[in-house]
Image 1 (spheres, rainbow, N blue to C red):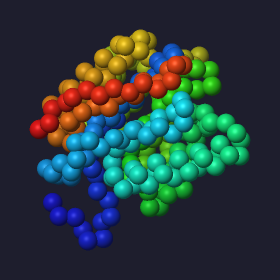
Image 2: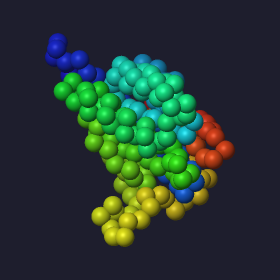
Image 3: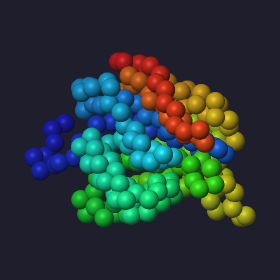
Length: 221
């Protein structure tokens, strides 16, 4: 389908997933960058380390993706110079919300998940819409394969409703290794049905000892 001449956005596809545990956070995204039936590259990372305990995963329009990451990195550098410390993950979540809302009339065409550890060492995942509305959850998925992955995560993790009283922690009952295995399973499944997700999945695990990264091969067709 041809785009209008004044249409400046393009969805380059891809899927992002995050799971928060009691002392860890797993964030993953595939590495395919495509438009329609054309694959531009099979090695595009959608994950950006913003701070020591904070990682952003983004799908959508590649140009806005890079612009948003560059904006957040610059704001974080200013914060470090002013406060002489790294920004916490909840603080970064609020900064990302403000940045997206500031551009609400000409928004970043990005679908974001922010994950990391909070000040208590618990895993945290923040999920966003395009104009900055966000929520802290136990798990989330964004991108073209999210509709295939979220039902599986709902079935396996059953995160407590934020409406329940007394409030419960939005963390999953899985161990770190089980969460990584679940992420691998849902990506392998989504790749079978979504042509915009594939090639490799980049998995980042954040815990008290630091950030660990691994890659897993996916379908290439």
